[in-house]
Image (cartoon, rainbow, N blue to C red):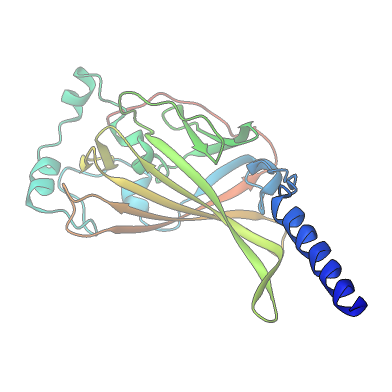
Amino acid sequence: MRRHIFLAALLTVSCLYAQEEEAAPPVAKSVVQKSAREEAPIDLTGYWTAVVTQDWRWRMVTPKKGDFPGIPLNPEGRKLANAWDPAKDEASGDQCKAYGAAGVMRMPTHLHITWQDDNTLRMDTDAGTQSRLFHFRGSKIETGDPQWQGTSTAQWDFVRTKIPPHMPGPIHGGSLKVVTAHMRPGYLRKNGVPYGANAVLTEYFDVTSEPNGWQSILLTTVIEDSQYLTQSVLLNTNFRKLPDASGWSPTPCSAR
């Protein structure tokens, strides 16, 4: 009899304890969200200069009208490119058409990259005196009419060490991915090769260090535009880091 009473009491206490556990609110864990600047796996800040080792005749000088091999234009795009008139662009205030986000990075330009705030990376070009803003999570994005540099969202693509069983380990590098849309129609090349208002620009920025101490940005660009292109355009562009701002020379846009 006593054994039965003891077991009943024990069962009652266990039930009450379980009810208290179930009713207890979860303990909130404090998670501090790092900013994009704090998380950066690579350092893109500083002054950089374009290294033009390919496509020289389309990048260093303004090509002649109709000179656009390698760009998969559809009939509408070819028609527009063949009608290019730099004097008309200047008269209409469109002399910056070749300096939009999808074109300016192919210019023989210098870059100046800084953090505008902890979640916004700023890139200035001396060619055309343009500014691009790369907005990470938590960065305020201004909306409105399309601009030459469009709206760019950014994220870090981290490279991690794999730890068995296939769990992500410590970060040991990475790259920057930037997707730009909402751009004003512009030129992929300075001689009127067009991209439209719905074009999407995807860029991957990698930083490498060479044995001689030089640092380089390896930029891989994908341009998608169903309005004027029959397929995506893939481009590779290199920049080398400079020790200071001595080569920095802002110049206005020019249609010629």
